Length: 628
Image (cartoon, rainbow, N blue to C red):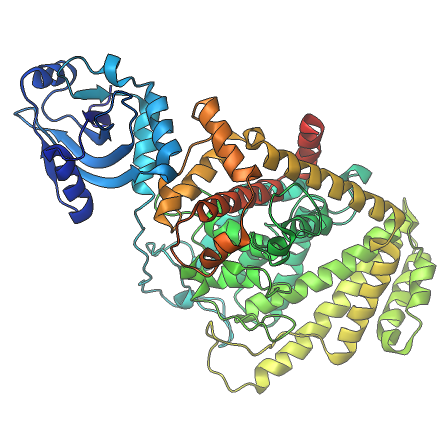
């Protein structure tokens, strides 16, 4: 028994009683009140508690009728038994009315409480040491509290590595939650290490790039792609005297949000959310078309993982990496104005990042972030060609022949030199075809790195800025006009020969079937979701900005079947009136059954999206076989 985690349960049969009025006063005015025990009541309390016991206060009102159904609950904290056996408390939550009925029932059900049998005659107080009850009540209270967010930290300019004036310096690192300065690590080293040690980073080892991992160990995964982007980005950053640690942190984190089965996975999730693929969501086509449940893209999900999904630190969600890292990860690829950023990034981050949707690619403020974005392009051109040559989809001769156009002259001449070197080499290669592919990819990557470095250095030297802040919209890191045309042309080749290949098309179709099935099954029966996901749904409901939605939260993995069935019915199958939620979509605090139903359905759907997006290829297939 933990005497600091007790739950003092008091019953009350009148909304006019003094104890009810005191509870209401404490709730409304944030005052500390006392519950005075007397006679039999005090004797009962003395048997179960002693002076100094602390915990939570649960005040139940069931009215004066014979049914004794609890219809009103106050939940308080700072409860403590005083010397006269009275109990002090501060009320924090008040559940009442039809919207909160199931939440109230779930709390009573957890205790298996019977008003007549469990409270002896003339006794109005019980003490519970049930850990699950304490934790749920504590979560219902804590969900109302907000972390103090501030950013005031003096940072020192880092030492030996000579940074260009336009590079990000340690003293510019901005975090949402303040942390102590570390003498043995730079701020951006800290970011990099947190990303490498994250769960999402480890999962990239079994997430496909284009070809399915079942084709063999040679073909690339998200992890190998990420490491290649990191290598290319660091080479460019080093040549331009940019911040290597920041560059590496952004590169290692840029694809954390990728789904299983490559880009087909993210496309499928987004199409489900906007109604293009029917996965069983009970909502009108018009509302789905207007993205009432949001959208999905991997760069948005990567930012969410960094700022919310990973849980390794007590004071806050996410990894608390710097704004520079979050912004670089979020903007490394095209952003879509139709996808609601609020589903992925909190306001405290959004207000510190500049967005410009008028341009094809939302400008990245830091040069390090710009380097990673272009390194991602270079890596994709290189390894997509590598996969095509190694798989036999395209021969070396065919590839070189496709480059026989004027804009590719420089690159083709370089590749012909590499091919000649392999053909004339004294050394005998175990597999000449693989060696040719390796040298071709090496030369493609070198070609683009050299071009970007030279072109970007010119831009940096011409500029008149003394430093780069988070409002910068000028692009310094870029291909030369000629190399940009070559890059675009190589992408077209890949689209024709690799992305549209029969085997890839078949794998994409299978991926869509798997993800659609997983989503539909989880939506139709949320009990199939893991306990942690169900608890997250409960927490997200508790912390909802609309207090009426928050009050109606029901924990689906720790409740009676009857209550869970009713809750799932509301969340998944009951129709939602477009008119009934129109005001809520506009941001009002309206409270209608449609609003509560819609918000809970939205929470469920976003949780399903998160859990599927986080799966590895292997685990997604395993889940599919288990529940299809």
